[in-house]
Length: 334
Figure 1: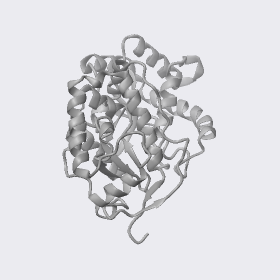
Figure 2: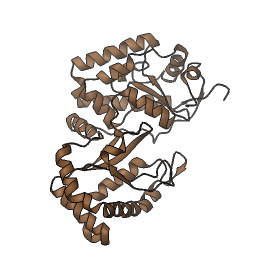
Figure 3: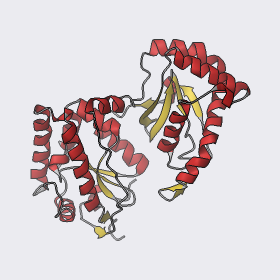
Figure 4: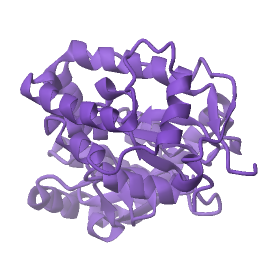
């Protein structure tokens, strides 16, 4: 259970803290169509399952033990540089909490494989993997809900689920897990409600609707309160942003349509944004109505395809989050 249930947050219990200027960096987008395509490509699913299944059976199934040895060697080669680059995350030592970093590094390394880098069964599996890809086999990174418990970054290799960061939650687990994808229970995050359920369970976050900054709500419909009390608009991951953009902000609209923010919480957050460059709602009800109206107007104006509007929203979110970083939610009596 989160340390900051809505009942406590609604009491407006906050303390001042210092912003982290290095956090929440903005990445500008050049082509929104390409951004959406890449974001949706992270959906955990086997695309063209008949073809990928046939290629997996032909090239990879006969060398599964070697494939595991290959990925274990690949992971071992990544650990030292990744540990030097980020020895801790969130106060926890590497590899804890570094699922994305490890998976990204493995994905990059796979682009430069050669059988001569390995020996024995791993070399045989490397040759098979290269032949698999040359024949049209797919290797890509995906992000989603693992077994209803975690947010997960993993590789989909044909019809195989390959987790090269299996020890980033429980460090005593084996670093690599390979399963048939159908057995992995790796599911797409289908909407913001789904995201909120997993974030609450896995990260111990409290998730509230963004009735505070209506102009940004179509892009960032949630206010996230972390287990440490840090407050931010979000989420900003490419998959969920691509999901709402590709559906004309309808997922955001659904997320914003529930109960309005509690008034006392709203006033506490609003006070932190007195100098924000983006208009702040006057009260929760007006904020909700405006947020929903912006979803509809942005959809009517096809703003979901506007690069300039997207980049402006990203910049504005950064400014808002810097202001919110001056606040920290604390439990009552804390």
